[in-house]
Image (cartoon, rainbow, N blue to C red; front, side):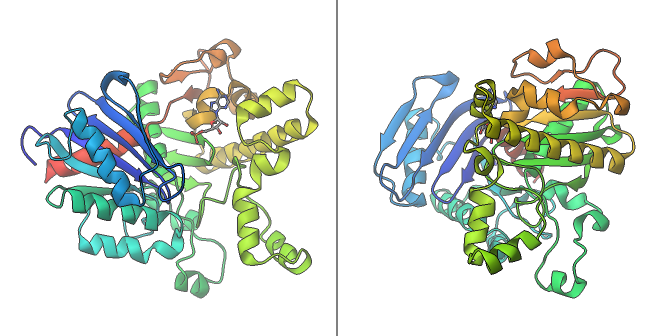
Length: 403
Ligand code: AMP
């Protein structure tokens, strides 16, 4: 890395999409952002937004695979004078979904690391192969540049064994690496630090319940900056009610469906991951639409909202007990940052736990971290916008700067 190099390209590669952001870590400025979607499908397109929100550029119909998509991203960046060959580019940071127990920290990628991410594919069969494709393509484009993997699971590797293990036959669990890994870790890490800053406290002395409520949703209990429990498990299916995922259910529901509804494992997998949660309950997974429908008197939307909020409350209570002392409950991601009625409903009736929401503060719309609890509340309630790309860039830059 040259002394001048202060830029980090963050890549989030999905099975048919690549999201990217180029950040300058000295100024914390976002130099470009973009997305390639429907890679390898008809109607593939790249949308690139250059520096200072300049005019968006769009390219369509030409991305056969991830390599073609990333080449096009490199061309768009070059057109803005931000090419991958620039000496100012310090590193590429990759989001990798599953790091298992192997990766507890961001890691500079070499062949050995790639082999290990590959070995974890059975634990994340949809995500890790896509992440690997992105990494391999980026390494071909810039073989000499440090590339860093930042794992969604890493923040949760501090969970104690009693929180991470399922009460399953231990030999079977070990043989198949079955345990709770947790996900959204980059977001939980970023939001925990930002919430401690908002409270004016040292993260090492701050206990938090973080509620990441997006299309996927997870809660975590964070003691002194370290995760001690989280709601997602072996996969991102466990825990809260989500846009299309069921969250917690009795595992016997699966056998019941297989024995009585003639469904095979793949069909139940599809049902629980794609056709359950809010969309399964009321036909909509967007909280804005659900709120609109509730106002129109839609009973299914109302019940979906109530089930969503009830599950949130159960996790709040559980993590309150796990932590013993809570400094703040923190809401983040699409629903957590924007849906005031969800925040209000999740905390209603919890005054006995010191949890209250100030209606006026809760109604404020802002992109800034903010408190929504009344002054002097025993436990703070905060809204902290998440920024996973910035966190990946930070972790990547810190690692390559230290080398
Ligand atoms: P994320 O996965 O963090 O991008 O969150 C996406 C979800 O956030 C969407 O599916 C919506 O349900 C929700 N969302 C975004 N904006 C709003 C809003 N203004 N009010 C309620 N929910 C919102």
